[in-house]
Amino acid sequence: MLTLTLSEFSLDDFLANYWQQKPVLIRQGFPAFSDLISPNELAGLACESQIDSRLIYRQSGKWQAENGPFESYEHLGERDWTLVVQAVDHWSPEVASLVRAFSFIPKWRLDDVMISFAAPGGGVGPHIDLYDVFICQGSGSRRWRVGDRGNHRQFAAHAALLHTDPFEPMIDAVLTAGDILYIPPGFPHDGVSLESSMSFSVGFRSKSASDMLSGLADYLIDNELGGTLISDPQRRMHQHQGHINAGDFALIKQQMQTILNDDEIMMNFVGCHLSKTKCELDLQVLDFPINETELRKNLQQTDLIRTGGLRCFYLDDSISQGICYVNGERYEFGADCSATVLALCDEDSLSQAALEQGLQHAAFVKALTQWVNDGYWYF
Figure 1: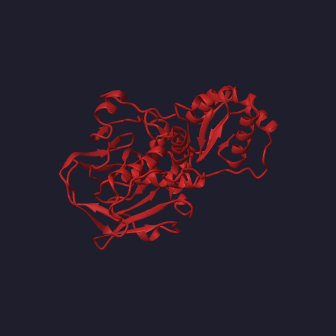
Figure 2: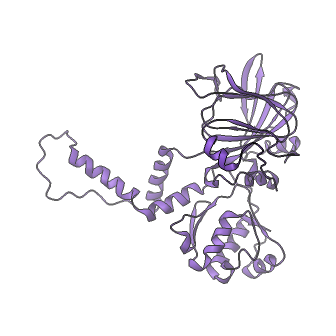
Figure 3: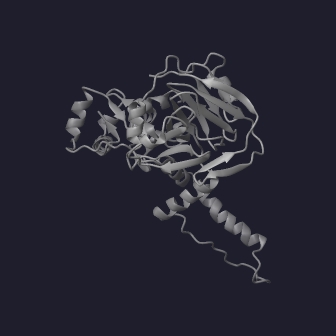
């Protein structure tokens, strides 16, 4: 398993002084690091229609971008192009193992593991991201320049590429295998490959208020909640028909605030909403489903592995009831299963011992069997 090595500061120091505050270069964060997937395997993934991929290159001095799937790369030449593939952790167990090294950040903040292969001179251009990213250098080398936050003009270098004006770098360094560059949101940066190279980017992104409120509205509608209308008996006579007065405005706010103050509704919404995946999963649905007896027998021989990208969460106020959220769905298994639910959500590999409590309860065994048949976990 990959272990993050910090020689100049601790994880506590990183979180206190760098996380979402300023970029930092971590030399040999992964000592003796080697590519978790080959360039050919990455190119193969970009041939699949269900996987989000892009080619970015310059043609006659102008930036170009194409969305996959791709059938061939022969027309690109030997320089100045980059292949970018999103959510590779969903499709490669080896790449998914990279996420574990950053488990000091909760997985609900995880976006995905994006991998890029770049020919010499390749890059995506100077740009600003709205998420935190740990850029882990694989084979080859790239020069990275990172500027400070500020009022940087952004413009469309191509319909699919938002670039920023030239900036003065606060970091200007060449990354080689095992080096990690952390960049918080809002800092302009530009990476150029010095030779054929691979880069593994672990991104963390929070949700916007508009995204959460939109999701909450959908959740309320789907679950037939929040349908209570404003009631105002014995209201006073209104003087101006077009006026939304302070009293009515307060009623409207209170109607909405009542939902936000309902912890049961909000916990279930947050758990379901944040556990949904934005990209497809590589679900290995069993052609010949197993039954509960076969599940127990297999667990005696080997562990269960979580499919890369699957999101499973619990909350403080409901874990005691064995409540968890798996890929957008709520499950309640009871207090006796709380330890099993913790293992289910926290661990990528599940042994029979870790599942011991849950295996004593029919509802959990039924759900676990269905999850295995659906490809959420596999032996």
